[in-house]
Length: 301
Image (cartoon, rainbow, N blue to C red; front, side, top):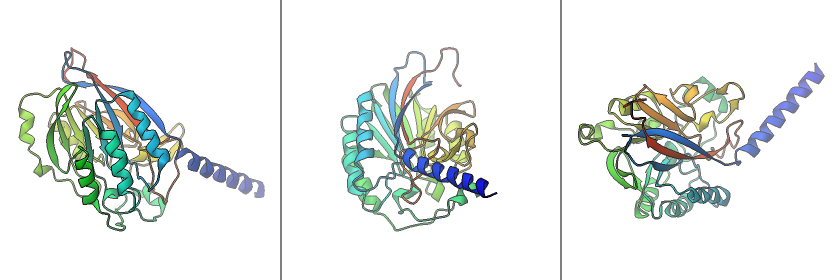
């Protein structure tokens, strides 16, 4: 029995040690998404960033994010939880000013862009979506003002047209459903009946099923989200155990088809809460999405 306990403790320590190492082992993933509106549409390259949980002076993450620009994105989309510390606003604005320079850039907010992280029992995630325990109130408006001054479209239950190399995109960004900040009634959904944009793009932090269903019902081609951290701790051969929302665990990260009408891409994100700096079998990531025309014979997935 003593040997078994010692072996179990050794494995546990090794797993935690690896998890601490892995949470800073950044990777850039590439994915092709056949979501553009027709066979004659122009392909679009999107850099999808999420869940930076940026702390002050985090040069390692900032350097990685800057290097992703070498892949020439036409559009940058950031799906929330930018901040990981009350003192990180200036660093976040400086980094994202550089990322958005000379290219269209869109962001939505997550709960951690309003409230600082708090210490909680990590086992709560196994019992279902966590209630958001509100930490210190952050200066969200200063973050938003800094991003807007740098040319970012920070969407808070808004619909906009974004000019890109692939044409004028129809983009809706909803505020974070995880804390009830989404207000779809503020969006003019009647525009969906207008002239067809080459890409209708939904952007939201937390991929709750009712929000995804709304985007699909409105004829959106692709929705980008974050929040799940890809499960953060994944079991090899099984995958994510949790998503911290009602999204199925098989969709916790990467590209998947939603309701046979819309593509969904969920980023596992780049950061973690500073109170849980561990990832296992789930490297922190950014994604390059090459959005190409749908096959000529199909209008849906």
